[in-house]
Length: 331
Length: 303
Image (cartoon, rainbow over all chains, first blue to last red; front, side, top):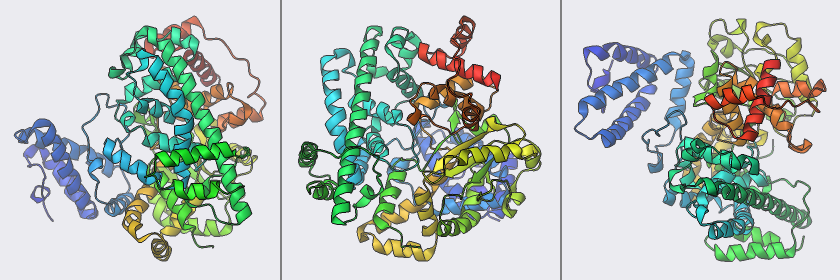
């Protein structure tokens, strides 16, 4: 049997760690498929700890690694053996981590973990572009550009107190306001594009996101009662004064209206694509084929011209071409 | 079965891995509440009942081996012990693997029960059938009553597509049908999509939402209440404020309340000063949140 400490990246063993080491070796003996995963986890964890503590803190890093190994061991030992085998198989199937998936240090409020997929702006832009290559998401993107952004721009321009709140924060709040649905609907498509447009939101601490979401859904009566503790929990760079809270609440109401209008517009455009495809007998391309009609009326020619305008502005988004090919035909 | 529709399946796969959920509803064992998974509020795995009614026969035949051989253990490591699928009749029967894997004494005590229902495929009266059948059972597993039973809905088309892609022949055919520049992406996305679906089934990818915030605050005020019981109370208080079309019925208590005509209209008590003072010391709330938390706490006490 291979000893744990002979594997690359493993912490040095001592008499204090012997029990954990023996139990791991027993587990790996029964589930050898888990070994590569464990090696990878230890290497990644060591890299993170070295970045945080410095490469000279070898002893402290080893101590923390043994603590992690003990915790993981308890989790695995609590599972039935076939489940450990299954998870090992599942882990072995996973692709190597992308650079954006590198483990990050825990957030200050570790009880409220950040969304695991908080990404760099460059990565988020690439993912958005990949997503809107599908006509369904190009359509959702257009609805946000055409109905949500026009509501948002004057709000932040006319109210200096809200100017420090970035657009992605509003988009993140709107995303969190859309109820989760298990299937791809027009509303889900809009919600997903909002998520892609708000990479900075996922990077906020969980406590700040929660406080902001509570304020985002507050009514005018709530606005008067907002406690200092809630304001203090908001993202620090917003610097929202007590006097600005009612303005935020009013702005949130406007932005939510923008989202309702975007959803309604999306439903009408979906209706139009369905009507055209029924008439021509052509299938709806990509994700458009998943979006169901919900009894909304059909989009007008003026609304179709708006889509053309957005497509012209965002020419790199390839999902607009198949969308316009359908919308340009009479339903 | 017809060949898999490549473009829609591919679009759905990308959307799920990008963050769209493939299952939603009441909390599952993986849903985080007050910073910890809902599982931590009780002991042992939850019982999962997947509903096959509403699925077509070829879909059932595709799902059955995939669930049994591939998914059952992967759900168990996510703390959901899957029973045999529900057909026309609703009853609890554990398969051989579940019987082998369940912790000792699992069937001797009440457990949270999560019904996985195919979204858009079940008849409106099906929810009542779940409730009637579970209420009729005289076994310890269900003895805590409906406050521990709830529903999550899943995307049946996508789940069936994943089950089909589990087979080598289907996967190769699908891979050959997509743009060659995307085959490597497909190889990466397929396991990621499967893991995302499993996480969605147990609520592990649930994000912050309005209702989740209420569940957190009511749970903080009632720390001994099970997350499903808290969710039931919160769902009912939120339904009171919604138009009929927007109301949800994911908690068995919500369904039960509606069936017994206690759901609407209900007497809505006003928050007392005593409750407000207690809440202020535990979790400071805005006035509207405080009123909802009070109503939910009253419902919890009544249940």
